[in-house]
Length: 140
Image (cartoon, rainbow, N blue to C red; front, side, top):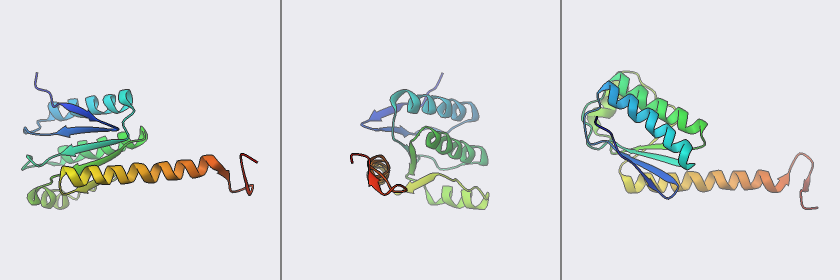
């Protein structure tokens, strides 16, 4: 059975799609990726689709599902390497991909994920250190 590898790189999972995704393979990727986000505690998922030349509505929904499920597990999703024809097709199909961030390449995608994690950590730290509704630090 064909399987798309999922690599762990620090706090992120990296998926590079190098083959045409038929429906079963796409559904397996979705399930395996979400399982790995949960198992590893990954904070980000980077999906490289630079080798993908054609998408359909099913594939668009799978990417959206991955982003939504990852977000529920406290991980951001970035799709990189989208070909212009793929972007045009997604727009023409009317597919909005909520929760999916995009970048031109893997390097920029990793930078974007790093920035999102730093932003999340700052927000979490601010909430943990003070109780603004009470007007005092928890250490006082």
